[in-house]
Length: 418
Image 1 (cartoon, rainbow, N blue to C red):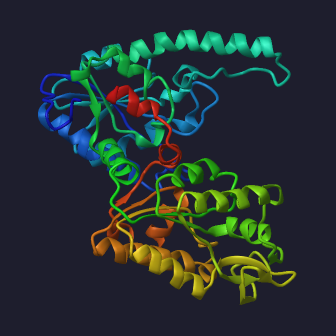
Image 2 (cartoon, rainbow, N blue to C red):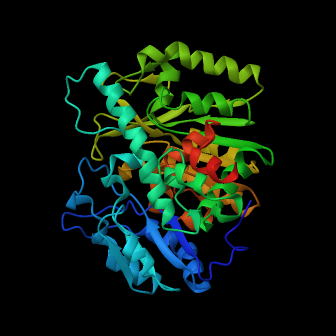
Image 3 (cartoon, helix red, strand yellow):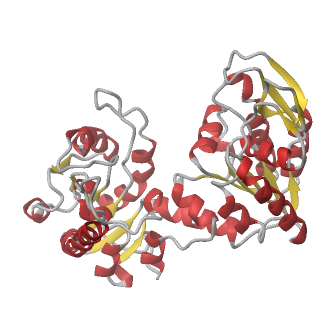
């Protein structure tokens, strides 16, 4: 497989798919440029080689073309500032031939939001709510057929293709997967960021050093079931925490007050416990909770066993006994995966459990463990506690990381690796 370091971009046009889907305020100003900065090593490598850079990205979920609210023009100046060279702008990603042809070595062009075209995602738009199944099928077929022309046009701009957008790697979109078919194996490759993500996932899921501990948080068992079932065949320890704790507690006959619970998933919880035992996996659940009398940072608080929460109270975080149990398991691990907080960490009064998990991961990492933190809330946790630089890797991909953990083949990765 071709790599960025080995490829000389001098005199070549490179189409680079990045993820510049950054948050903007009401004045179209960037509030967090992490994704832009993360792509800079790849983009600068191409510029410094004397390559000609064509940058493609999406932003948001536009329903029309164009949609000023989602125009990448709002980030153009910042991209130029970060890259260190003026970046030109193509107001239509499908009508950029002249601007691409005018590029000289060391110059860059940012294409307008690729999702302004329905062909990028391959999904029809503008269908009436009462459209028949036949109409929906016809519209889907039409956009899929035109998607080929859309993809071919993007590919025609460049001599080589670089995918540096792990956050969209689980989507078989025109610019994230289909475009790769227009380039041979020597002219398509991962960017630095994408490669780091792929290596991190492979290190956790395939090249595992044991003991391997996964910490899965979140409010619902149902949203994590595919991940949990895949992990039960791979991990030594599985810590299940967050709101799903109380589905397990109730399934075992516990009293959970007004805590969040999926009553229709009680049998599923018991089945997970059974499978963990059959697979020799140490399933670790909370034993105590910090509870509140309302879902608020200002709620009255107390501690209770997870199976004995009073009426009118709900579990909002793990308690001190559980923090110690979780920390002991984590600190004795050599590979650690964390997805999902231990409690309502957004409320400072219920953030201690998630912080304790984060600190235990940091301690294990300092002793040589490999730790991968991924998923929006977990990333927000380590950032809130100022610990992001003390774990091995913080993933930029939410859905993509989750699907990789589930064991799915990601289209954006397969398109490069084959």
